[in-house]
Image (tube, rainbow, N blue to C red; front, side, top):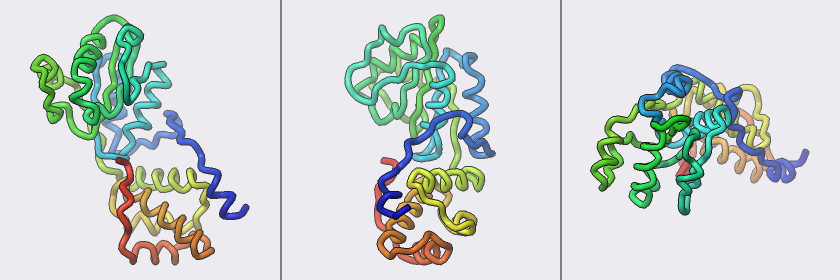
Length: 226
């Protein structure tokens, strides 16, 4: 297969529980998700830095519970969400425009059949809404935090990013990267992109030698996981 053909065959992301790697960095968050529907007040806030796997875990939960998903933009039909599990991602990035919506969703989660999974980079106590009633509810939420990736998670992330770009690196590339790159999902994706672009530009296979070359040069600012 030519590189041009490979570059045009990016695979969609898979958010199933089967593909979720559980390790010390996320096992407490996974356990909190698995405690559904026994969350206090029916609400759980899943918190962690960009790229640590919040969406993967949240979407896998949504598939298993048949949860309704709040659209990232536009009005929210609260009536259509009543009495069912609801997933609302990136909450801290949509406030204050949706403070009243969030207030009502939290109240609805305590009703029969209801529940609410929130994802955010910051803990709910840091969201600082203007509504006093919402602020008190956020302070009382159950929070599960995902830590930065350990070796097991970082390895699965590198494999995922290579797979999404239809790349099969040499066997020693991922172990080499694991010992040398920053422990973050953003850095893992950045390195995979840079390897892909360098291999394409130079007509080379993705090898340990190319990985060494990439890591020895100053990376560009890619703005990943915004």
